[in-house]
Image 1 (cartoon, rainbow, N blue to C red):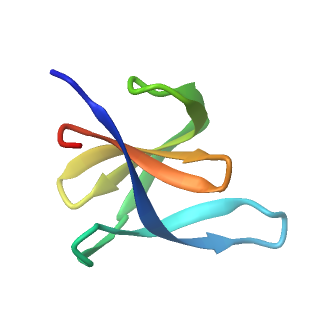
Image 2 (image 1 turned 90 degrees about the vertical axis):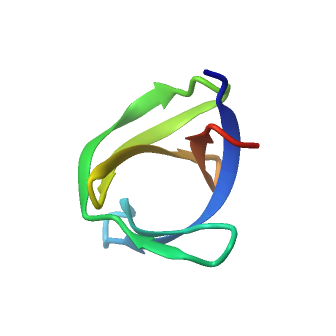
Length: 80
C-alpha cells in the first residue's frame, strides 16, 4: 500500500514548558476530530519521508500517526 504525506490543521495546547499537545485534527473538508488519547510521543521518521515528533493518537476506535515537522503537522494518508 502506498502512503502520501498530507498536511492538516491541528488544534493544540501549549503548556508553560513549551510542550505541544494535539487536541483536535481538522480535515480538509472542515470536519473536526477530537484526539481521545495520545498513546506515544517520540522522534521518528515517517514512511512517506520526513521526520519529526510522532504522536501516535487514538481518535474514536482508530489509531493514527500524527507528525509535527518544522512548524507543520502531517499524517500518513492512503490518498494524496
